[in-house]
Length: 328
Image (tube, rainbow, N blue to C red; front, side):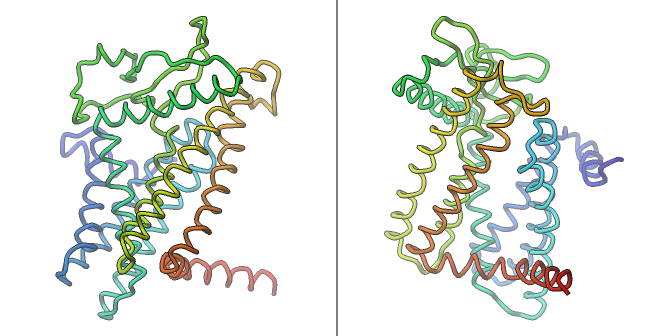
């Protein structure tokens, strides 16, 4: 069955002379410009951009589901597909508020949180020097942790660039280092891990291994808090960002250790230890850690807790209503 959304985006891209990746980038850029303008502008008319911004953002994340199907990541598949109806719902809520000439502070916060989370991430993703730097730093820290704990003498291979049909080393790549203008393969910029004797571990680090997505969610949520002193917001960032990085290094090291030790002897209905650890166990661990950190931040930043409860209230009502009907 053809995906109508993807087909429509592809058709628009062809009319503009853009490939699918470039069209997707244009979509999220338009969405973020709309949300950012509505959040930062003092002109009330700018708020009319926000419903359109939500729809564009939802389409962007929905289109990312195809990649997660290819790598069999059920958690991110669900989150990507759910993003479209959720964003459309928030866009509709914004439109109702605008029509009634009402304003909810928590919706203003959510608009700013999405903007300040997605905008830095996209900047890092599409600036090769930053992208490769984050990937290398994450892989290097993981290698040091494995060697320090004695879990394995795992080292870094050369930084590579996935061109789709082939890969080249970073030094041999002739692309622009400061603005990604080429369409790369799924691996993008990656660092393969190797044993001390030079044999491959068959695991490579990409931007998604850096936990940058998790970090940036907290950055957006904290930066968008209006009326909260910067000192308190800075303290929250100092608590969360290094902690997420440390936990992620531990996660990455655990996945590599499991792969090296048990890949040849472990099987669960055709699933090897790497797929189980990466797509299920590590996701469960990561989501649990983010939930606990959110509880700490709610105590430090009470307004953040209020905003989260307010913007999630419609979902609570929908699921609460469904549960009531089912029980009756």
